[in-house]
Image 1 (spheres, one colour):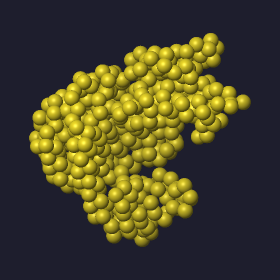
Image 2: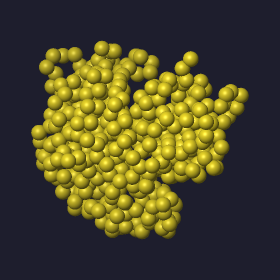
Image 3: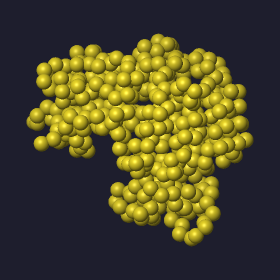
Image 4: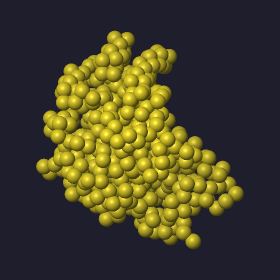
Amino acid sequence: MKQKIFIKTFGCQMNEYDSNRIYDSVKKIGYEKTQNYEEASCYLLNTCHIRDKAKEKVYHEIGRVKKIFRSKKKPLVIIAGCVAQAENQEMLKREPYIDLVIGPQAYHKINDTILNHIKKNKKTEETEFDAISKFEYFNKIKNNSGNISSFLTIQEGCNKFCHFCVVPYTRGPEYSRPFKQILDEAKYLVDSGSQEIILLGQNVNAYNNEKYRLSDLILEIEKFSEIKRIRYTTSHPKDMSNDLIEVYKSSKKLMPLVHLPVQSGSNKVLGLMNRKHTISDYYKIYDELREINSNIKFSSDFIIGYPGEEEEDFKATLELIKKIKFINSYSFIFSPRPGTVAADLNLIDKKISMERLEQIQSQLYDNQMLMNQSLENKTINVLVENLTEDKTQVFGRSEYMTSVIFNGKKEDVGKIVPVKIIKSNRSSLFGERVFRANQKVA
């Protein structure tokens, strides 16, 4: 009888990618995936350290697992991801229910670590930075995601050391995978049915392997006839190079949504954050891309209430949002991460930060609503990903990554189809499949 593994994933798309690759690895030692955590013989939490109280959420989750398995055989409990990297041995000391702790650069060791634990019943942590060995290992294991839209990590780590960010400490320095290795994995994804590839990295546009840059990858991957769409995330304004901007002129499959985190609209706050870009730099990128294609839209990330943010700094952020008209963004109140420069700075009054966040989110939500409403009664291209849960409709995404639900059929999955948008809300579009030949689409 095969052992069953349940993985719960927190955080970013890279963690989702990592979880899928962990599945690919542990299959080789007899584990099969289960969506039913109660039947798991191995329970793995893939953790994220970006948001507030990440560590405590892990211990809360372990408490929940204890209750679930109180009257059953205890599963092998593994903590993976960025919290595992940051806390390592401390987690094993604090919570005896945890068996193994594995950082994101040590996933190539997961099979041996599991087998060694089963043999010797010894608690272990693996948190060395070894990105090269990790990707060489996984390059030998096919990524058969089977998804219409698939993630593909091309770069890990960060050298920017923004004062609020824990990534350099949990993911290590920037590492760009070999060009051919990435193309081999893209081919695996195509062969398993992927129609869209989303290139991932902590600083994805910092990709630099020998003579190759992100722009080269995009142009090479779009040569696969089966690939219909290409996206990339997350970028840093400092690495938005001329060749990447120029690729928007020549690429036929790169989508017109640019996710480019700005964090603040104030140069003073950007300096305090050690972001290494200015607002004028950001506007320059925006103007250059919009000149190439006026249909390009931006999304972003914002940290509100960063230590030192004054009312005029906040207003500058609000003004930036109004000017750029970001169509889909993430915004949070600053929360200190242990080990970062900003960890011990004096916090802004929480009430003030919350009031500012509400104003920011209100404006961002208005932008989303206006964008979605502008598509009502228009026909747009939708890449269909799957049937809805009740099997009565289909789910897909627009070129701008917006969810679209409409009256398609199973045969539409994996195709780009024209959909007339009937109504919308802030996060989704709802429409009807257009069957007329030569339908002009927006």
